[in-house]
Amino acid sequence: MERQEIIDGLVEVLRTVRTVDPAKLENVTEETDFLTDMNTPSTELINIAAKVEQKFNVEFEDEDIDELGSKVKDIVDLIIKAKERENS
Amino acid sequence: MSVAGRKVAVVGMGGAFPDCADINVFNQKIFSGQSLIREWPKAAERDKQIRSKVSGFINDNDLGIQPIYLVDGYEWPETFVDTSGRIPDVNMSTADLGCVWAMMGTLDSIEMAGWTTEETQSEKTGVVIASGGGGNVIMRNAWHAFFELGKKSRHAGSHMVDRAMSYREAANVSCLIKNRGVCESIVSACATGLGNIGYAYRLIKFGLQDRAVAGGVEGTSLETFIGFDAMQVLSKGFSPAESSRPFDVKRNGFVCSFGAGIVALEEYEMAKARGANILAVIDEYFNNSDGDGDMFYPSYGGQRRLWKGLSAEAVIKPDVVKVHGTATPVGDILELISVVDTLGESGYHVSAPKSQFGHMLGAAGSVEFITALLMLKNQQVPGCINSENLNPELENFQKKEGWEGSMKPAAAYRDLIPQQTISKEINQIVCLNYGFGGTNSAMAISRDN
Image (cartoon, rainbow over all chains, first blue to last red; front, side):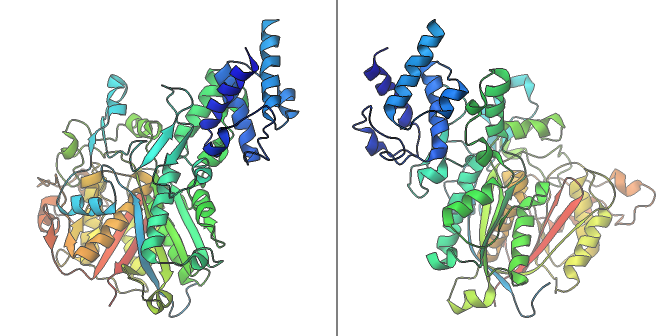
């Protein structure tokens, strides 16, 4: 799965998170920060992680979630890592 | 205890009503004798799993609310959006459907009351709202993900707690309006709606608050519905509009319905001083318990003591008695007789609004309270539809040894129960509601003179 493909899917997920301002989803890059750029409430991050698991049909380890950064690239890395783990 | 000279006014109302776009449509339908009860597709599609198929229900996407699903075809909405833009998304994200209605009813109530932002956000403004049931829809979704699908706890949703906790309606409303006073829920089964208004009345009467948003809610929930269906206490065998038939000899159960009723209360002199439109003055509130040790069976003694308590320090001479009147076989006539034995056989009318919209459980007391406010405003009593024939024979409980009440059959009191809307001078109304556990509540309201 290409990184941009993952970002596109991630943006789709974020559109269902109503506390994220839709206007902030226009130019999402790997460096976009959920907390500082999108003003996402911190309570919403775990919801986003759970939605991403459903969307990409993967399961994250609790430790991965605990250490998860707040940038888009952190989630992309995590999805790739989880996919690789499942395929190995 | 109550502070001498302190009175409480009702200055605003709002809510969510089945098959009604807003409170104006509700008013029009109720006083023109229409039923708000329909066949409920969600129940009907369960076919033989469910006995009763009718309800006064409100869909997820009614009232300008848009449910948001993560995956198409998924049964449970992730969250809701207010398409009218009155409730910010961040508040919607912590709300189940009932909370959304509570917030909408609150905004309408405050707008009608005309409170300033400063007044609303004061330390002297409280929020007292509850529902009868738990957050059953949210919990089923959460438990399904965890127990059935074996998902991690985060798939129960990080908003499971705030969307399902017992006082979610009060919490959501308080976060929306940012009041700084009391925020609590009073839960007493089907007396919840009136109980919350009664508690808020006391907060103001006792000098603890100057204002309060209060009421009861019951969000549409098949999970809630099947609990009552399992007890075989729901109406069965009639067309939807004919299903709720308080006092009628053929009644065979109540119609399980959903909705929300919210009112704005304010200390009377403050409301008067700022020129508020006073919908009613609360004369008195009283509540008690049966003391019979019976979870379900209504109590003649408990209801008689309820009236006695209500009358202890207030002049109670109602033109209308808004009864609980659910259309269960025993409850209606026992309640009717407790009213008659207290007030006599004439000089007032009995109103049973559940005949038109069913039993809204935790919202029943507050939506019926709003119906009473509309009676005061319109100077009309809506008819008890479907109360076609009253039993000419004595009820079984009247034949039991030790029965102390009236020995006349229900049919003897036909004149008290209008079948069509009537106009008359209405100065005072008494509202009655009861709940499982033997809890009873009564409130008297009057026109402002």
